[in-house]
Length: 611
Image (cartoon, rainbow, N blue to C red; front, side, top):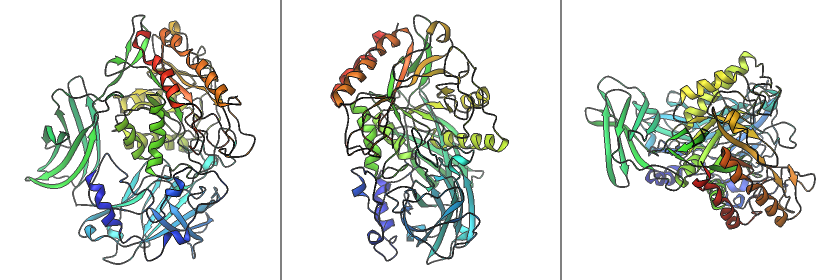
């Protein structure tokens, strides 16, 4: 994007007179990815963080911040412990800290900033890609806002707290109870073991400043409709007044193919012979979205959209199937945890972030299930461009109810009896996650619950999700507890693939296998710890691994014939003590030949398998 080129100029004043590399180094003792050595402490993760809504004037605040870990009861910090490399969590090696924070403490960050000249006479927004979990932000000693939620982006208008010139002090105070609280946390736990991993506290995505006019576009929602070749826009505009006009133009490269204006905050554009987005052809239209007053552009953002449709239809036997653009497409991909040995939740570089996606495609998969974690916006942007189908999980939390995994016993497992606080947190954060990611065409399935991990009021949550975003499918509970609500019935089974009885369940819901496999192979020198690593089934050599994997894969065509619409193999990479990845945790070893996997997988996409 052309606007990103302006970053270099805007970043020039950010070093604040010291050599950042001289006070930072990764914490020793853990395996590292190849990209760890490419992390520049003066310029970590410099890419534009919000590809769906781009403006030219912005300022990246990633880099070294002062930090202190203090008891939660302390209101103020008199001195700082050292430097932390933002946006890496303090528990990670790449932060340069490598310390757990814990529920008894808070982490406090401090950064001195001088605003670029381009920010003059503009409103200034302070953005956070994600902060886990509860934070308060002050600018020059004045509180500018509080936020709870570890997986959604947010911002504060800090204009009124800024000095007219000179140093601006930003302080961020964060508390995270990890598994001692009811909040969504995914796989984090204070005592990592098995399938549960290291805590992630505080800032873990890009922090940045943005300059905007008095009237500016706060958010957009794009909805493609390939049935009538239209793209709908709903925009939330700050300072919108009578007489202001909303405009969206649609571009195919340098050619403008459509444009529409509206005196309201929504509009619909007709796109003649719209090109459809798919894994085979992930075509994206460029967009320019503007607010005008008497022909003058008050604010403009650039964006993009993919014209695609995800739906359900019956095959010749009356069994429900997943359809992409009205055609049956078997969806097959790995369970992707999105963890890194050096950055934990945060990939070391944007190149690293793309790597897992690129390797997934090279192995012949067409889908990724993003498991109980939400990624930075750039991850979905890469999926959009590459043509990967994404199932997006809600990060789980407040666990403890009974799990009944057998699909033949619908609803036998207990639902979690959540407190009013816990329920409100879930609902607020699930909506925020959908709002933040609703425009990415790669996301085709929402998954509010995994197994019975905090699963509660299933019918109500699923029906709300379906109503809030009718453009996608909803997988009520991947692995159960099972209810006849939502579009999908999703089984988990290790290690062998299975499918629910199509005669009983396939008439009402699409049948998928949300997890299977889990074949483990530790690779010496590339494990989180030297011993006591595990997989759901352990193998000794790469050849044994491939032969067992091949055996499982060859069972899938028969399951597809009778009703299986999708399958998810566990998993993309090893994660901490789990060694059931297609790649090692450090991404240095791909355990099976990519081309052999791709050739093996091609048979699964044969449409002749579908009656």
